[in-house]
Image 1 (cartoon, protein in one colour):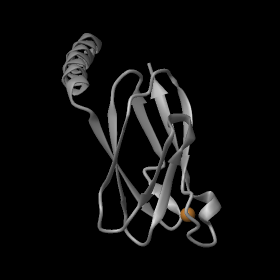
Image 2 (tube, helix red, strand yellow):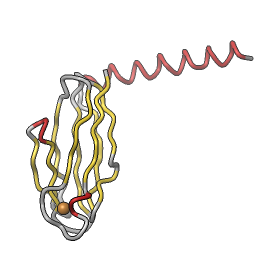
Image 3 (cartoon, helix red, strand yellow):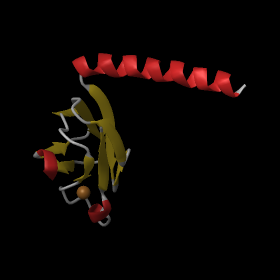
Image 4 (cartoon, helix red, strand yellow):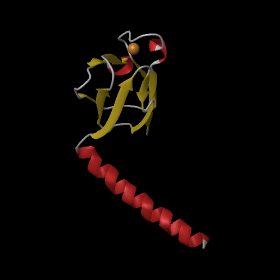
Length: 117
Ligand SMILES: [Cu+2]
C-alpha cells in the first residue's frame, strides 16, 4: 500500500517535470486581478530562471502595479490586459503593491512574489 503511494508520487513528479520543461520555452502566465484594496492572488510562486508573464487586470478602477526589485511599474486599467514579463534570476521574496492612490485601504494593497529554485 505504502509502496503504491510512492510510485504514484514518482509518476506525478516526472509529469510535473515535463510540464516545467515545456514552460521554459514560453513564459508561464499568472493572472493577477486588482480591486480595492487587494490583488488576487496576493501570493505568487514562480521558479528562478524561468520567464513568467504577469497578466494584470482591474475590475473597478485604475490601480498601479509596482515591483521595485524588478524595475516594474505600470498602470492597471479596467477593460485592458496589462502584461509584464519578468525572469527572476534568484530565489527570494519580493513585494508588489499598488502605487496609484485608490482610497482608504490603498496602503494595504500589496502582494508577495516568492521565487523558488
Ligand atoms: Cu491603490
